[in-house]
Length: 512
Image 1 (cartoon, rainbow, N blue to C red):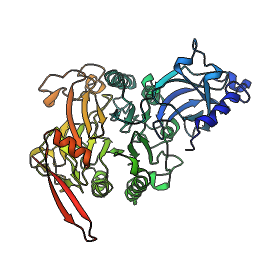
Image 2 (tube, helix red, strand yellow; image 1 turned 90 degrees about the horizontal axis):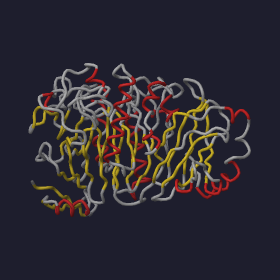
Image 3 (cartoon, helix red, strand yellow; image 1 turned 180 degrees about the vertical axis):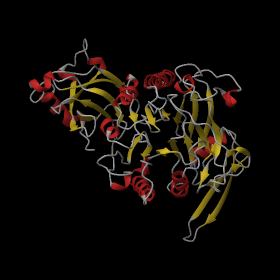
């Protein structure tokens, strides 16, 4: 995506905000743009707005500091107009538009609307934060609106999770998707329910493509993502009829890389690894953490644990991710929660790490993999027992045989949840938090799609909204993490070896 700098656009805005090209009868008479969503930009100083329109007439996003808007009006002297790119929809008719809002200032409240000079959408607002330092982001698994068979109930659960999560964490800075926004790729009523909450116009959504999104072009019509590579290997099939692409962005010293894991066969996994390698080589030097996001959970705890495609990803990804210095991997697809042990080269890095440990150390090549549960309550998958007859390399955990060997925690209560990640200079904190109970809105429970609800397979009562299921502090393999871990009561041993080229290599190992 070509970035339009704030200074350059200011001059454009003066001439096009209410002027030539936007006041034609065709544009003025057209309905206001709809299905608006605020997307993540290439950096903390950018957001991307995407929408649907009934016309391909010239459209803009008008942006102003909220404090300078008077009685709902965008004053010309304080308004910047960002021209849109508008294209015909491949499916479902109409057009889609997007514009990058670039050059944003830190700690500023902005308001925006989308239109054509004659007709404007409602006005929405968002706030930027500091561009460096600590922050939190929220990760959501599989809303999959429509999968219960009741779009309205699914949409209600999804909207409630967003409301609960952002009421509890109003300063969260990103909303990160685990994929499967909808059940059926080109079903616009499902997309309408997914987009129903204004929270998606107030906080930036970092989209991820799931297997239910991939089979049509509506995903690409609804989301414009930054730095996207749409090369053939990053599509599962025909790019003319399916969505795809890998992309990356940086946010406050964290490098996020998002993959279309639907493309995995015919050397697609190798292409993903090459993409990750090149992005890290080009962008990783200034990043404190590297976070990968994709849909298909390779250390799945439930129905998809032994899918043949996941077995292949388990062979293809872990060693590469360890070698590339990835810190955290966020995944969806399995509608249940898991948090892995620290994994190095596809094996448990520290055999002594205990199940459910609340403090873990990364060590060289260590990676934690998180699978998100359903954020909407539209569908849950029950945990499965390890089955070596299907995959001999994905058996039980010797320390907790009911779990798969890779997972420190596996959980399913048939209640809606989300994941909160706190990014600090010396650690990451990952929490799985309840956003609902067994009560409505919880479509799978309401419609009898599951037989029980609550902890311990329904043996215990549902816990309150906002209560924490799992929490772990994750100390990175660097001086900051070592010092923080030591201050938190973690003991380390240090060993030194000399490599063949004469370089000294230091290895730090935690001691329980």
